[in-house]
Every structure is written in structure tokens, then in C-alpha cells.
Length: 328
Image (cartoon, rainbow, N blue to C red; front, side, top):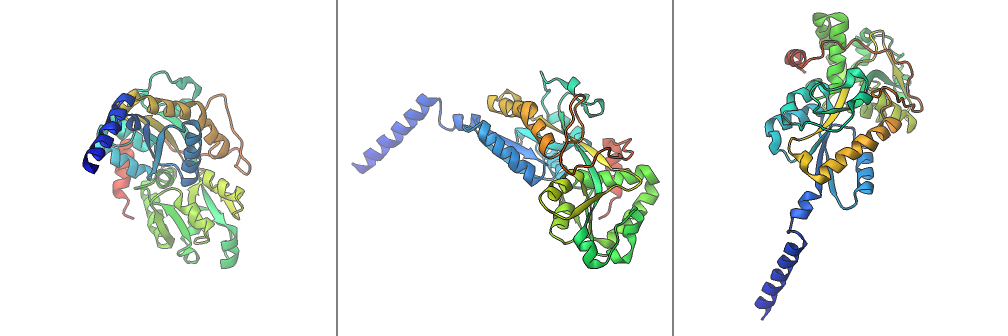
């Protein structure tokens, strides 16, 4: 009797699923997977806002450094689990364009000219500026003075007290490398990083690593992101942002949809929410550096009139060539 009762129960459940539109199908249609290179605090904010806006969707944000993200998509292609890719460095996004959908109906005229994608397969969402960031408490504790130029960081007194992202896995790390190659020439720039490596506590895998190390008091100086430093300062960290003569290196970051996934209603709605709302909120709260032609944002303690570095010739070919020479 129990056997027949169990079979009836299973059959009834299956019938209910069919009548409702198919078991698992609805869940799959409402599931949206986002691979994001954004920092943890930004991803947490996005997740919160997406859960509020789409309570019936199962939205998953999976973090990975932008270089790793691009490599994963290159390996998996359109068969990837991801639906949306977010916060991908422009230096990497060109490599995965064949796997991105053509974005129709999104007005690119609102963006600064230097942020637009020629292919129309991704949209800008962040201008990420870098800076030299110091922990004033650690400087005082170690009896060190604030550095005023890159060469200052080569002294023995900085051994184990400097953090920098690895250019091979982090767009932030690469923009520091590229800015000095442009400013000094390739040979001198690589010689500099050879010397600096002796004082590096760790070449971090992601761009957020140096500021995290600064906040935790593990290092005195970080080559990191201005926006992340400002967030930490506003949360009470005793950090200071410095720009050397060469200026603030910067990268552009964008977002797109895996080709074929744009036909999925839930993916389209989530992507539209980023375009219409979340990217603006990201500027208001975390990354105010300008990407829109007619809209600017101001955040407490965020530097104004930032002197930007020369980032010309930032092509895929150039990036691959320079990273092939990077040995750390």
C-alpha cells in the first residue's frame, strides 16, 4: 500500500509540474548567473539591490579577478554557465567579444567618447583610476615619511611594506605597469618593477588586494584603486591618497551578455536594471570618475581634478606582449 501511495504522490507532483509549465524549467528561466570582477563590497550591494528588485529570480553573482574571468570565458565560450559578465577590463573584453551578444537598443551616445565600444557588444560602467595609497598609522609606527615619487619605494626601509596587484591577473596591476612603460619607456619601467619586487609583500591576484592589506595594517603603501581607498577612508581607515608626477593610471571596465542569453527574459531584465539603475548607483556610491557625457558624481573624500596618466596604445596585442615579459 505504501508503495502505491508513494507512486501516486510522485505522479501527482509531476503532473503539477507539467501543469505549471514544466519542472525545473521555470527555475532555470528565473536563474541569472553573473560573473563579476567587481570588489566584494560592490558585489554585495548589487546582490542586495537585485534581490530587492527581482524577488522571484535566483540571481547569483560569482566573483573572480577580471583576468581569470576573461580566461574562463575564452576556455568555455558560449557554453559557460554565466549569463552576464560584469566589470571586465577593456584590455580583456576584446578577447571575449566573439562570445558576447550584440547589444541592441542601448543608447551609447550618453557615454564619453573614449569609453564606447566599437563592436556594440559591451557597455562602459567604470573608469577605474589608480593611486599610491598609504596607511598613515603604519608610516608613523615604522618611522617612515610619505613617498613623493615611485623611486622612493625602492629603498630597503620599504621591504615587505608594499603591495601591488599582479598585472597578469589584475587589470589594476596592469594599468600601473602600462602607465610607467608609457612614461619612462619599456626597459626602465621593467627595471623599476624588478627593484620594487624586492619590497613587495605580495603581488595580489586582484586589484582590491593592496587596499585590503593597507586596511589590515599589513603594509604601509599600496598601488591600488582610488575608489576602494576612498570607501575605506569613509569607513574610518587612516589612509591617504597620493598621485605621483606620472599621474593616475586608469582602466575602463564594461559589461555584456553571453551570446544567446540575451533572449532569456530574466537576463534581459537584470541587464536592463544595471543599465538604467545600478551603474548610476555604482557611480553615486563607489566609482564617480566620469563615463557619462552629461552627468558627474561626487563622493565624500574623493579626489577632484585627478591628473591622469598617459595610457595610450593600450591594445590587446600590447598587453599580451608586456605581460609575456612580466615574471612575478
